[in-house]
Amino acid sequence: MSDVLPTAFASTTASALRERLKIPLIAAPMFKVSSPALVTAVCRAGAIGAFPSINARTPGLFDEWMRELGEALSVPTDDGSLPAPLAVNLLTHDSNPRFEPDFEIVCKWRAPIVITSVGRPEVVMDAVHDYGGLVFADVVSLHHARRAAACGVDGMVLLCAGAGGQTGRLNPMAFVEAVRQFYDGILIVAGGITRGHQLRAVENMGADLAYCGTRFIVTPESNAPADHKAAIIGAEIDDVWDSDAMSGIPASMLRSSLERLGLTPETRWLQEKREKYDWGSVKETPGVFSLGHGAGDIVKEESAASIIARMEEEYRRSATE
Ligand SMILES: Cc1cc2nc3c(=O)[nH]c(=O)nc-3n(C[C@H](O)[C@H](O)[C@H](O)COP(=O)(O)O)c2cc1C
Image 1 (tube, protein in one colour):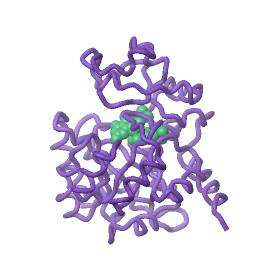
Image 2 (cartoon, protein in one colour):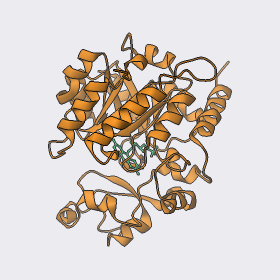
Image 3 (cartoon, rainbow, N blue to C red):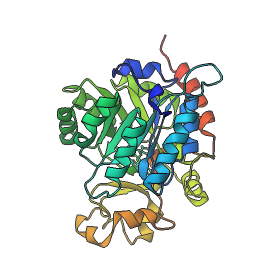
């Protein structure tokens, strides 16, 4: 059986992982957006490509995607190096009926990195460690970060203010500093990142990798519809609002999308409105778009390889002598 383990790790340290990458970057998993083509392009360009398992409509299709990705990522790149490893995002919440079948497939193909979202990293830890993979958990608060550290996760994604999708609200500098007081695993910072010099800033802050979603929506490889891409190109930072009225967890949305859902500046914070909105169907509503603060810096569609090459150049130029 050809599997994706050839791209996994001999060691679980941040520096071992970093050696596999051209730049310290994960192209973040995005519902309905991340495609096998995007993951392949990102990994072959030298950054970690990630996707939610549920983007494949059925577990059978997810299995097929893993087989194809395993093949595509076993072929060395033009400079003879192995592509960067991929990451699969699993919704570990117990309300997700896809968790069991998708996790079985993750283990079958030995996905090098598993990113758990919405809590419960503990349900995947033992099995992923047994096959040599890494577990990263996303967290929005110190409380979550302490819980994830207690579970022994290999890395944490700090969802900071301005991240696309479900977002945190903490300042990245303060959040990294606070988590570093008790955690020396891999730290990944998310929220508004679009440039290579920002990757350097993330490292200087004491974290290891940047997590970048919105920038990769506006690529030919993403599965985002044209109106989502156009909305991002047209948006400035002030057009990105967050609201917790839909799921209880704040999400970054296009201001006009919230208005379309009937939410106003006054009601977008009101948790009691929650019953009115089913987050699952909100995400599927036509014309309702999620995006992060970084949308303000996105002015055109660019291929994933070109974004990564540009970031690599910006990252290199920002090195201090
Ligand atoms: C349209 C969209 C869909 C997303 N879907 C998911 C998802 O399915 N799972 C997940 O863990 N995060 C999801 N996210 C969050 C991203 O993984 C990541 O945290 C975020 O995009 C980083 O912030 P940035 O967009 O400012 O770069 C989504 C983000 C966006 C914009």
